[in-house]
Image (cartoon, rainbow, N blue to C red; front, side, top):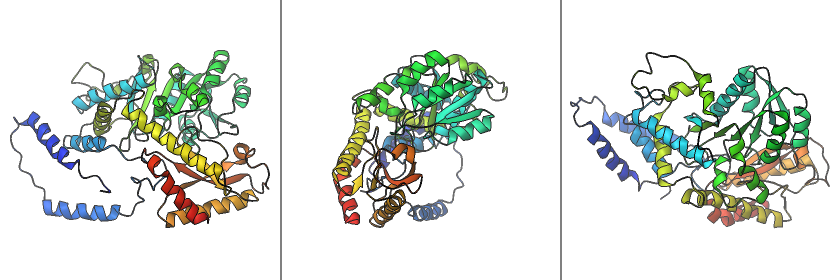
Length: 446
């Protein structure tokens, strides 16, 4: 079965159980034209056929991971109530579920005390972190690597904060020597450390940046939107593992459950180590926060209305698969990592391709061999298009010479970048499909 339907009876059973909590209400006459609903829904299904098969292992392009069936079902089940987690009276049960789920994520990073909540995604999570940084360190600069997500510079502009990007080393990680030169100016308030860049999956040298923090006294915000859950994986290289082992020492963390956390879009999470930053959010809304003296999630969030369904789905997924090392969830991450290593081994052994560096997480970047940067870029695009015609979907990434120079030292740099092939092997099923995908790659490259 390509699209899971075996779990649908559980949704009906769940609805019956949910309805038991509201049996004392008088009946309301429904005015829905069910046949019209059916016709529109089937039209939606037809329109949605115009999509890449994001759910299948043949899709290894962008960062798209199917939600777990329990997340999908829990989300749909909550839609019959449609809670809003801004205030407790709008999301009574789902707000509690959000607090519990977020606490479990904080514990995953080694924090017993924290302040945090869900949000629409990594962009909003990073915005809140940099907003707090700007309030705590007014007039200071935000620094991130040149391979950090582009939203950091954009967010800094929105917040009116000064921003500087720092060059990367030959593996796509922030160059800590260049970082220290930047820090010597004395006006850096926050360093954004990326744990899993979107282009290559590179993990910045957090341990070294923490060492620099002792001398230069800046805040550290970790953008772990993509890579954060790999803190649970037992399949990382030793150098990468060392960076995750010290993540509990940072000031704030952004992570996206709607990436590796098996959640529907949009479900991001922002965490602060110091709960006292909650005072920065303080505001009054006497028409909103009136049902309870307990903390309303809107009191510690820049967003107002938020889907309680996201919290319900996340809570259900973490109940089914706890965020613990060596558990089912952790093993599924390790399978993604193993898939990346297996594909890398095939690429490295092939005379047709160049593998500039080993993957740190589950993103693999490589290219066909060629005599010049432009020739390699053209060949990468040609392979990308040929694979798509065969039903295998990769991505392409334009990477600067600074990162790739050592791996492509013996050819002509007639442009300052190379367009490479890129694969996000986010599904644990990819491990079982690498051989088939590799056969397809071999077919289109001759």
